[in-house]
Image 1 (cartoon, rainbow, N blue to C red):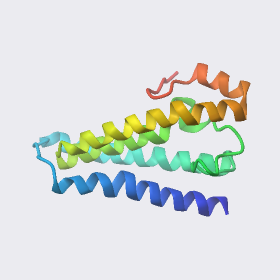
Image 2 (tube, rainbow, N blue to C red):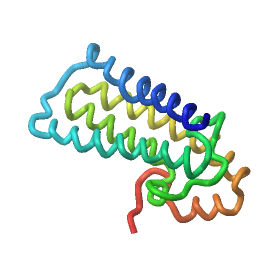
Image 3 (cartoon, rainbow, N blue to C red):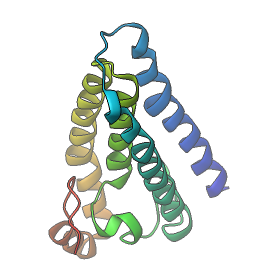
Length: 155
């Protein structure tokens, strides 16, 4: 059942917030020519998508839960992309958004992710981190000290 819920959430979240809404901006924004840089979109889409999928897999099978806040993992997930950054789903989505901008060249495809990032940041700081501190205690506190929130730290 957890796998099904996680898959449904992935389809909803990725479909709505990473694909539909940003690409709906294509009709309403001015465009710039990104030239040869547009081809950087392909590796950004691949890396971003694989990161998001890896995180969903880790939440489902290692954490025994889903990324959905109402059905979170039962165990703290600190492996895979979570070794480098505390919020790799958002980081993966940011790579996808950057790929959208480079491929299509519409300014709104930079504005939307900036607003989405602000929303994600406030959600993480005001809800997610305090909730995880209460749930996982000292192990999460240690994780907070050793892994950055947004910008990956590679050892």
